[in-house]
Length: 268
Image 1: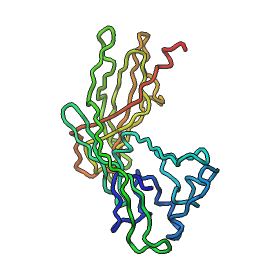
Image 2: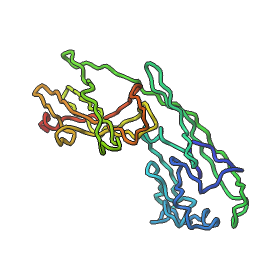
Image 3: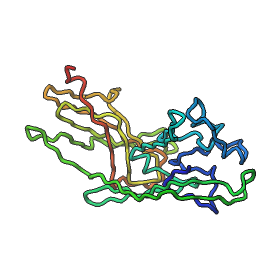
Image 4: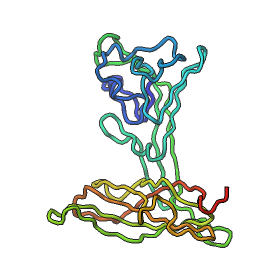
């Protein structure tokens, strides 16, 4: 079974050339003969029979995928769970993006198509460059997220505010002008909430390496200001490496966090 966000090409594709979000791993096929690509276990419900490099018909899976068969009479079950950023970064074997992301003034829209196929060789012992493919299903999909949500608490205060606190350059070597840029953000959350797991979803330029992390005086994401009325102030650092000058920061940044109860304001 081949599950992916790109169709399997019977004439130009190769079963070992797996994309980053497919239900198989390119590394599993290394040092294997073509005949071993199609090995499967007659007792898939037993230990080490699924998700194992010795049986590549149901071989090892990337982390978003799971594979199971509970009993002798249970069907083999695939399940895949992808975070937004994992989907956005899905690529084929050649490094081409597979999903489209478009934005308007209100929404971020991700669209694509999910393909489910059964693939078998024309000749089991040798790769002759052609496969038999039976397309089981092809599902178009679209995921939409509202770009901004303005929520007020019971006393009319914004539940979430984000402000650019500072931006500067950090020099590794002043002589050769190398270093990185940082943008410091401050977030303010009310209603006894605290932000965790920062993730930089998108950024203005692809010609640099961008990261986001917690910041300020060695804090590990806890509230720098922890007010008695349930307000939490935190600081975050966006750092930009591998710059190709000139670089402009103009454009759209998209960040996401996981909101949790502030442990310093919760009794139990």
